[in-house]
Length: 425
Image (cartoon, rainbow, N blue to C red; front, side, top):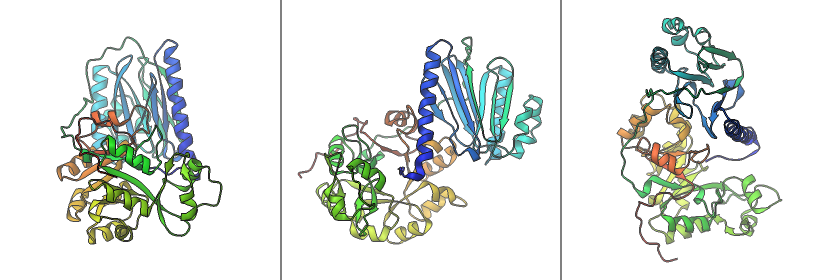
């Protein structure tokens, strides 16, 4: 779901730094005391706030996140969108007051923007002694903790980074953020093979071999990234920079269709032009194509072999309206979804939009919306699976399915789902 272009370099560096943070945390804890490394970034830092301990890292959402320690190696956490919601501010203040009363040990960190008049005007936060928290301004970094038994607060306009020892005397039985589970029936349509699915531990290939291998494993929904060659032909590739690395192509980008077809991915996997995509789906009549990147629904639906087996992730209000007017199945992308004013679930229902794609990183902060969509029967699929340490298909299956309908998965991890036999080639 993410394009690796020159504009993505800061994001790639951010992921590298995060991986180093996780490794550093693991090495520190292996030397003796269990430690936690916390990074709070303001909006202007353009980085994702995070923490890591015992080799496990977590990104946090916009607002204030509370990390509550139940033991030296046991914790729970929750993000509150205090910037965008007075209701979230109220809940955050109530939890902080209860934790203080219970003498709990915790860390609070801000991400992006966390300030709100409900916080600055809170008499309760003032009475608890959180002076800097009530003085927090928009787009500032912030860290609060009481791990050493005393309250410590810090504010910075850009970023704050601390490494703290977790006391081995903590033994807290209270769970402030108990895990919620949602029942769901296993179904093959909950899993979309991301970029055709992983093949021989290689991702993002968008190739025939990936489709073949993952069809055999059980997938029936297949996402392909659709982009254009220099002569205006549609092909399956994540982006041209990645394709050129995969194929060792050194010519001008984008290539022509003829040039595109000359090259294989890592010398083993065959790329897909539009004719190849149609041929494959013609021979796999229970398979469904889910598109990414392309935002021309009417034109693409006319080119694809079977409009009834097509779901198009779309990225603008104009393209979504065009698709719904012509009976094309729409997967509304995250950005246009979040831009909708008023009741989002009602809008989707009225416009016959049955599918939504969002990052799994936002679902905890958008739980109310996820539940509303679930109630309306709208299928929410999460991407960014395998982007964060430990957040793989198994994690999403065990912790997030039910709240959301399904996921973009790199590999098949759902052996309990039965599928039809493979058709003849």
